[in-house]
Image (cartoon, rainbow over all chains, first blue to last red):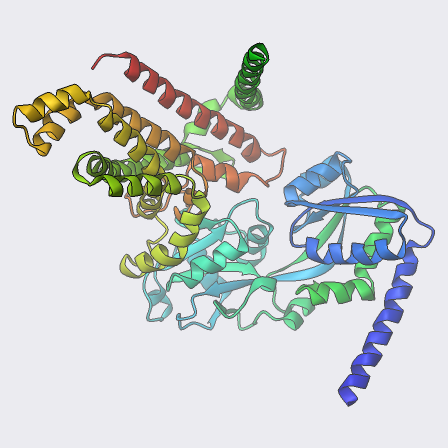
Length: 272
Length: 278
């Protein structure tokens, strides 16, 4: 009973705050187009549904295509906001006078096969493994054989962040096998008893083992506090300062009701 | 009415052929800046490393050739056995069944083969080959199933098209089925066998999903068939969402052009073979 009352209360509070957050769009009308990274789509779609229900005069569309496509389109003025799974590069910012806003955080977890008896690796060991300096787990004192590296393609935001934060921009071995998505990475590592790779923290589940780096384990708290250092923001990128509707949408994604949505969909809200 | 029908045919042929031409022009136009860039031959160097501005396509070209040649070899052996069994050594109703089965196989999406192989073949090979599950060997083995129906159907039709008169004459002279097959049919179907192999090879070069999901896509130049490799098609798929102004992105137009040249060469060699008298 207590639980029921409590949940009723939270529901009430939520709906209250949701309504007040929707005030951002009062008096606005027009169209807002978004394209780019795919990690953002689920949460932004949910937010758009709320907004368009409350204000029928506002039309919003969202498309995928990947970070590179989104940034290209926002630079050319084809869309109002681009979704990016990595920070825009320096020349991209200069080319399009881009401004970026973070609305959620995502960690990148190093994963190994469930049967592999390892809990923690240091950053140095990680660098040695991914540059191909150490070729077998025996050298790390583990009773397992040859290391099989799995990485992502160069256009992946996950790969970008892992190379710069996880292994300090070291050069990844050419022996590494390349897979095309987070899901493919998980399948590859779970079917290879000596496999090691990395995926977005939001997609980690029991089929693989996420290990700790420098004794810091990935979790929502450590990622948000910055203790677990391999993390990234999910960016919304605009050309120049965002226009009124785009600004309202970005603010909404960062508001309490936006955070509620992102949290429900497995991301870590970031409201600063 | 007939006039309208003929007119429609001409128009549709015109549209399709001009579309193909358009694709060729599009690819040449977009890879032209790279060709005139000065260091064009860099693209045929040994290493692809975007960070150090090395854009060698040789590992992908070699990967494509290795995987499709090996797949063609596997598929040749299998389709030859299938086709010869179907043409001579099986009873009529089982031939029909096998023929239907082959037609069905030719329609299965390639991603399905790759998907099944990832869950059945790759883990098993990972266990026995010490983590070499994602390799040229696996990819070409799976790929051979994709090109198998095409090759089998062509071979079967070639074997069946040997003149019945000659076969009857041979039978009346007391030749056994085996004699007829090895001495008459095989000698008359060299052309058909070659065109089956070439068409199978062309299909193997063009396939993307299997190489992308199973070959491992590593950037190293493959040394053995247990190494993983990247094909031109999967390279295009992997680089696709990159920064649009980068050389890496522009280089995939060159990959596309190379693939188009590949298929042009295979098809034209087919033409040459079919005109020649063997």
